[in-house]
Image 1: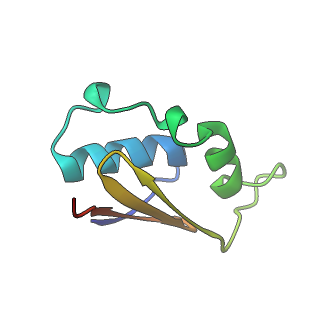
Image 2 (image 1 turned 45 degrees about the horizontal axis):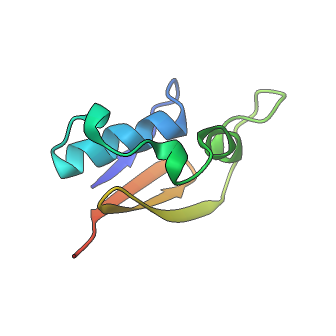
Length: 83
């Protein structure tokens, strides 16, 4: 699943929403994202700068739940892992 991160949504929220959609699971039944990485740090890496200007570039890939997640700029890719 490829999706654009909504401008009014935190990256960490987009990750949980997208992974739950790909896996067909209620987000409340999934392992908390904070068990995998710091959601505030993720939001800080890809959120706007302190002066309000957008950050450009950057890429982070990690595993969450049963999926591989890649955040690249304002785009998010979620791929279900093969077990």
